[in-house]
Length: 142
Image (cartoon, rainbow, N blue to C red; front, side):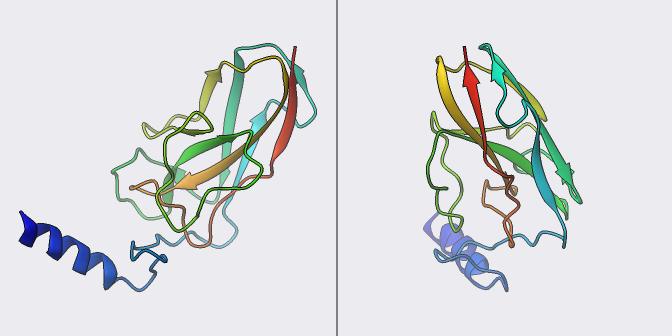
């Protein structure tokens, strides 16, 4: 078991696009963009909020699937700063994973102002190189 793990780590380190911690960075095509289709920036909405994800220049594939120029969405909720883009994105209340390849979801949000942003992750939830990140939007939940 230790030998197999060592071989996996060694193969990851040998990759040409490598993150700080040695994980291989999956390249994204030039011009790839993630965006939030709805709700619109500045919208006032009711919970649960239906969030629709958009992607230009790449395809959507579930986590664990290794197809060039694809990834899956991660919705960042109410974070002032993005998490490290050199590590797989952790699953938290503020970082929602859509590893089945979902392109929309209804999410429960408390009344008040909230920010939403998308980060595309590769087969292991690691942001691409360069990272494919949407503009951060602000919504108000009634």
